[in-house]
Length: 417
Image (cartoon, rainbow, N blue to C red; front, side, top):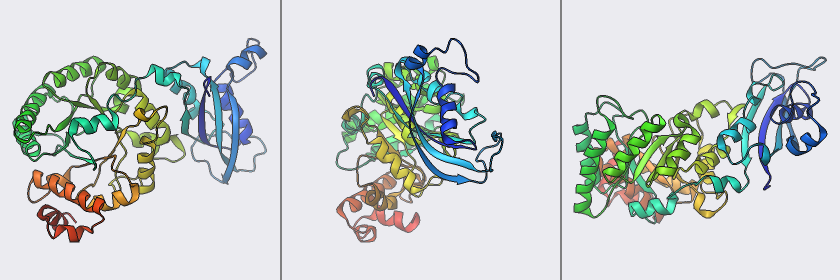
């Protein structure tokens, strides 16, 4: 394990699974489409990838992807299977960009494959030595927010975009004064000309600090600093200058190397947003599984990672969301490298009972946009209703019963339910 990277794939091919696997091995290590004199036995022994196992699955009469090559004499079946391949560590080194060139690279274009999905990665400990992983993770985030024994509960600024800075200031004032744990920018709200990030950081942090003086609790705000690398680091400096303790980055926009670079300089939490994830995952016969993806995110240094939410507004089913949470909480190399799973999308006070029943953990960040902003009692009441929903869930009390003595939860059930 220490001298190899192990990648597990789901593949589909009109060829024999063994032949297709050998083509992957050749393409992604020492070979090309024909034998070469310089591809010596000794070179192959040291640098050629190896097939560890092939698990046949069902066949399909139709290809999952267009452009697939069909062998002469084919019976028209496309064979599916799980293939595990070991790549020599010496070919790659502790580099996520070069790792991806090897375990993904040109595989998705190979004509012998009518479907391929990277479903898992096993990495040597040298990757953990090279990449710093989460600086704060779950324990550090709890310490900064002062939240223990329940999920960290927060909201997204709504409307997503278009609020003048002074209007944002008023929203943050009400939220922070209510004692909310966490606020974040929407992923589409970065550094727009009408409301530059530097102005928003200053206004929001003034209100957060003022509320903290009154309540004794400092709300964590994840400012969206996603940008070109040099500009992103300038945004980070602005957040730190005004006393912020969290930044948000769109992982797929800046890349894993961009996140890792940010991690080197960030003395604050990194909130990882996975927007664009559907391009990599929605089609089940192409792309990458969340199991592999979240490992790269955590290695790069995110402290929090979005996993969608139960009963969400997107295509992903609850089983997938639950698996994502479990993956984030599973150590790769050590206990400290886990990330805080972030549940969002159609979340509200009434979500808590099912979420706790299914996930059986409070090591979560549960955030809502409309579920808090749409509360008839205002933003603060929306936050309190969410806390009450979780109190009921943790105590095993039905929501309707708990709502009899908790007015904010009662209003949420009446209006949002």
